Image (cartoon, rainbow, N blue to C red; front, side):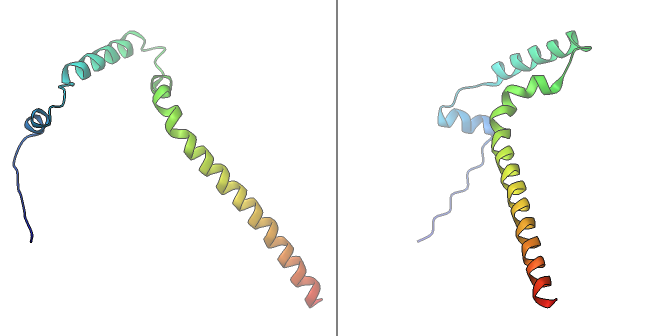
Length: 92
């Protein structure tokens, strides 16, 4: 048995239906404060410092992946050189 239900509603209507809070005023206030900080400190504006609290937690796993790849690359190079030198000894 297949049941297909097609509901046509706006995101605002869905938010109200699910009982989720309206965060638009808070979001606007935060963006206004952000704009004000950017305008006031144009000379000292550094986007990385502004986004640093959000990036610290998300970039850590990528740093780990980068280290794993570099370690794997180094170990494969060292294994490759020993195989090549062994093959050269056998053929010589």
